Length: 254
Image (cartoon, rainbow, N blue to C red; front, top):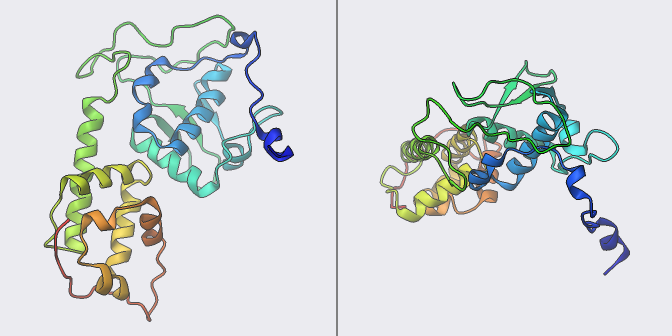
C-alpha cells in the first residue's frame, strides 16, 4: 500500500461513535434503491446541512456540495455537472424541494409527506430521536420498514419510460418496439439522468446525420446501453457539417 493510499483510507469509527452521530431518517432504508450513487451523496449532504443541524432548510452553494462546509465536512467530491444532475434527480423523484431563482443561492429542504408530517425544524440533541411518525395519512399505503418502492414511484417510472419510448419512436426509429431488456435499460438511465436530459439526447441524435445513418436502426437496447452513451448524445454539438435537421429514419426493433 502506498503512502497516498494510506492517507485516504478511512481510519475507522471511534469507540464512542454513537455520540458523534447526527439524526438520519430511518424510512430512507426502503428507498435507497431509487437513488444513484451521486444522488445518495447529495441527499446525505442536504440531510446533514438541514436535519443534522436542527434546521428545516438551508442555502447551499455548488461549491459547498463539491468541497464541503467547515473543517470536518469535505463535501461530496463530485463535479458540478454531476451535482446538478443529482439535484434534478432528487427533485424529480420527490426527495427534496429547491427554492430560489436561477444564478442565486438555492435553499434546499426535504420534501415532506402531505398531511403526514409538519415541515418544522428538528431540535439537534445527542439523544436518539424517532423521526418517523407512527401513522401516515393521505397515502395509498402505510410506509413500512424495509419497503423497497412505493406505488407512486412505480407509476411515475412507468409513465416516464412510456414517454421516453414514445419520443424515441417519433424522433429516431418508428418501427422500434419496447422489449423487456430495453425497458430495463431505460429505467437504469432514469436513475442517472432526468427526463428532459434523456429527451435532449434523443433529439440531438435524431438531428445528427452520421449517427442516424449508422445507428438509427439499432433500437432501444442499443441506444440506452450505457450512461456514457446517453451523456455523449446529450452533449452532441450540431453543426452545418453534421446536420441539424432530421433525415429519413430506418426502423427496426428494440
